[in-house]
Length: 168
Image 1 (cartoon, rainbow, N blue to C red):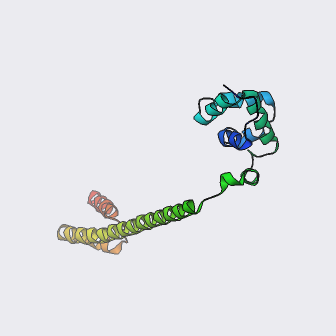
Image 2: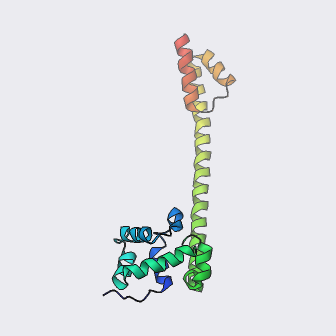
Image 3: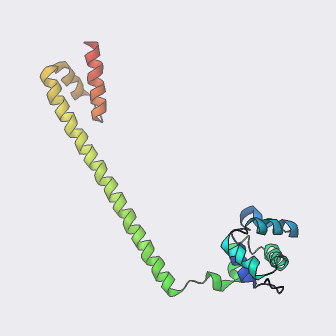
Protein backbone atom coordinates (compact mmCIF):
# COMPACT_ATOMS: atom_id res chain seq x y z
CA UNK A 1 0.00 0.00 0.00
CA UNK A 2 1.33 3.42 -0.96
CA UNK A 3 2.20 5.83 1.81
CA UNK A 4 0.81 9.37 1.78
CA UNK A 5 3.82 10.85 3.57
CA UNK A 6 6.45 12.27 1.22
CA UNK A 7 9.35 10.04 0.23
CA UNK A 8 12.92 10.91 1.03
CA UNK A 9 14.12 13.29 -1.69
CA UNK A 10 17.21 11.16 -2.25
CA UNK A 11 15.01 8.18 -3.11
CA UNK A 12 13.03 10.25 -5.60
CA UNK A 13 16.21 11.66 -7.11
CA UNK A 14 17.78 8.23 -7.52
CA UNK A 15 14.65 6.72 -9.07
CA UNK A 16 13.90 9.63 -11.41
CA UNK A 17 17.29 11.10 -12.34
CA UNK A 18 17.26 9.24 -15.66
CA UNK A 19 13.68 10.38 -16.31
CA UNK A 20 14.33 14.10 -15.77
CA UNK A 21 17.58 14.59 -17.61
CA UNK A 22 18.45 16.93 -20.44
CA UNK A 23 15.46 18.96 -21.64
CA UNK A 24 13.17 17.00 -19.30
CA UNK A 25 14.92 18.64 -16.33
CA UNK A 26 13.24 21.93 -17.28
CA UNK A 27 9.71 20.61 -16.74
CA UNK A 28 7.80 22.28 -13.89
CA UNK A 29 4.09 21.64 -14.54
CA UNK A 30 2.60 18.94 -12.25
CA UNK A 31 0.62 17.27 -15.05
CA UNK A 32 3.70 16.99 -17.27
CA UNK A 33 5.80 15.71 -14.37
CA UNK A 34 3.18 13.05 -13.69
CA UNK A 35 3.11 12.01 -17.37
CA UNK A 36 6.89 11.59 -17.40
CA UNK A 37 6.80 9.46 -14.26
CA UNK A 38 3.92 7.33 -15.53
CA UNK A 39 5.69 6.87 -18.86
CA UNK A 40 8.59 5.22 -17.01
CA UNK A 41 6.53 3.03 -14.68
CA UNK A 42 8.00 -0.14 -16.23
CA UNK A 43 11.45 0.72 -14.94
CA UNK A 44 12.05 -1.22 -11.72
CA UNK A 45 13.17 1.77 -9.64
CA UNK A 46 10.22 3.93 -10.73
CA UNK A 47 7.75 1.06 -10.21
CA UNK A 48 9.08 0.45 -6.70
CA UNK A 49 8.80 4.14 -5.88
CA UNK A 50 5.17 4.21 -7.05
CA UNK A 51 4.37 1.02 -5.11
CA UNK A 52 5.86 2.51 -1.96
CA UNK A 53 4.51 6.05 -2.14
CA UNK A 54 1.47 7.90 -3.39
CA UNK A 55 1.98 9.15 -6.96
CA UNK A 56 0.85 12.66 -6.04
CA UNK A 57 3.47 12.96 -3.29
CA UNK A 58 6.14 11.59 -5.64
CA UNK A 59 5.16 14.18 -8.26
CA UNK A 60 5.31 16.96 -5.68
CA UNK A 61 8.73 15.87 -4.45
CA UNK A 62 9.94 15.62 -8.06
CA UNK A 63 8.55 19.11 -8.77
CA UNK A 64 10.51 20.51 -5.80
CA UNK A 65 13.71 18.87 -7.04
CA UNK A 66 13.06 20.10 -10.58
CA UNK A 67 12.37 23.64 -9.39
CA UNK A 68 15.62 23.63 -7.43
CA UNK A 69 17.47 22.32 -10.53
CA UNK A 70 18.63 19.16 -8.76
CA UNK A 71 17.84 17.00 -11.80
CA UNK A 72 19.32 19.56 -14.19
CA UNK A 73 22.71 19.89 -12.54
CA UNK A 74 24.94 17.15 -11.21
CA UNK A 75 26.65 19.80 -9.09
CA UNK A 76 23.33 20.77 -7.48
CA UNK A 77 22.54 17.10 -6.85
CA UNK A 78 25.98 16.53 -5.33
CA UNK A 79 25.57 19.53 -3.02
CA UNK A 80 22.10 18.36 -2.04
CA UNK A 81 22.93 14.65 -1.66
CA UNK A 82 26.70 14.35 -1.07
CA UNK A 83 26.37 10.82 0.31
CA UNK A 84 25.09 9.58 -3.05
CA UNK A 85 28.19 10.80 -4.84
CA UNK A 86 30.75 9.91 -2.16
CA UNK A 87 33.25 7.35 -3.37
CA UNK A 88 34.47 4.81 -0.84
CA UNK A 89 38.19 3.99 -0.58
CA UNK A 90 37.45 0.50 -1.94
CA UNK A 91 35.72 2.03 -4.97
CA UNK A 92 38.69 4.36 -5.51
CA UNK A 93 41.12 1.43 -5.47
CA UNK A 94 38.86 -0.57 -7.79
CA UNK A 95 38.55 2.38 -10.18
CA UNK A 96 42.32 2.95 -10.22
CA UNK A 97 42.92 -0.75 -10.94
CA UNK A 98 40.30 -0.69 -13.68
CA UNK A 99 41.82 2.43 -15.26
CA UNK A 100 45.30 0.89 -15.07
CA UNK A 101 44.02 -2.28 -16.75
CA UNK A 102 42.32 -0.19 -19.46
CA UNK A 103 45.53 1.79 -20.04
CA UNK A 104 47.51 -1.46 -20.29
CA UNK A 105 44.99 -2.83 -22.80
CA UNK A 106 45.17 0.37 -24.86
CA UNK A 107 48.98 0.20 -24.85
CA UNK A 108 48.86 -3.40 -26.08
CA UNK A 109 46.44 -2.48 -28.86
CA UNK A 110 48.71 0.39 -29.95
CA UNK A 111 51.74 -1.93 -29.87
CA UNK A 112 49.90 -4.53 -31.98
CA UNK A 113 48.84 -1.92 -34.54
CA UNK A 114 52.38 -0.55 -34.83
CA UNK A 115 53.83 -4.06 -35.22
CA UNK A 116 51.23 -4.90 -37.85
CA UNK A 117 52.02 -1.72 -39.78
CA UNK A 118 55.74 -2.49 -39.64
CA UNK A 119 55.12 -6.05 -40.87
CA UNK A 120 52.94 -4.78 -43.72
CA UNK A 121 55.65 -2.30 -44.72
CA UNK A 122 58.27 -5.06 -44.70
CA UNK A 123 55.99 -7.32 -46.75
CA UNK A 124 55.43 -4.56 -49.32
CA UNK A 125 59.18 -4.08 -49.70
CA UNK A 126 59.67 -7.84 -50.14
CA UNK A 127 56.83 -8.06 -52.65
CA UNK A 128 58.26 -5.18 -54.63
CA UNK A 129 61.65 -6.89 -54.72
CA UNK A 130 60.12 -10.18 -55.84
CA UNK A 131 57.96 -8.45 -58.44
CA UNK A 132 60.95 -6.54 -59.81
CA UNK A 133 63.03 -9.71 -59.98
CA UNK A 134 60.32 -11.80 -61.64
CA UNK A 135 59.13 -9.08 -64.02
CA UNK A 136 62.74 -8.33 -64.93
CA UNK A 137 63.17 -11.86 -66.24
CA UNK A 138 60.41 -11.41 -68.79
CA UNK A 139 60.06 -7.67 -69.36
CA UNK A 140 63.26 -5.69 -68.75
CA UNK A 141 61.64 -2.42 -69.86
CA UNK A 142 58.97 -2.81 -67.14
CA UNK A 143 61.71 -3.50 -64.61
CA UNK A 144 63.37 -0.18 -65.36
CA UNK A 145 60.02 1.55 -65.04
CA UNK A 146 59.44 -0.10 -61.65
CA UNK A 147 62.85 0.97 -60.42
CA UNK A 148 62.08 4.54 -61.42
CA UNK A 149 58.80 4.63 -59.54
CA UNK A 150 58.17 5.02 -55.85
CA UNK A 151 55.38 2.43 -55.75
CA UNK A 152 54.07 2.18 -52.23
CA UNK A 153 52.40 -1.18 -52.46
CA UNK A 154 52.23 -4.38 -54.39
CA UNK A 155 48.91 -3.24 -55.81
CA UNK A 156 50.62 -0.16 -57.25
CA UNK A 157 53.24 -2.38 -58.86
CA UNK A 158 50.66 -4.75 -60.32
CA UNK A 159 48.66 -1.82 -61.72
CA UNK A 160 51.75 -0.37 -63.34
CA UNK A 161 52.74 -3.73 -64.81
CA UNK A 162 49.20 -4.21 -66.12
CA UNK A 163 49.18 -0.78 -67.74
CA UNK A 164 52.57 -1.45 -69.35
CA UNK A 165 51.39 -4.85 -70.59
CA UNK A 166 48.34 -3.25 -72.18
CA UNK A 167 50.56 -0.77 -74.04
CA UNK A 168 52.66 -3.63 -75.46
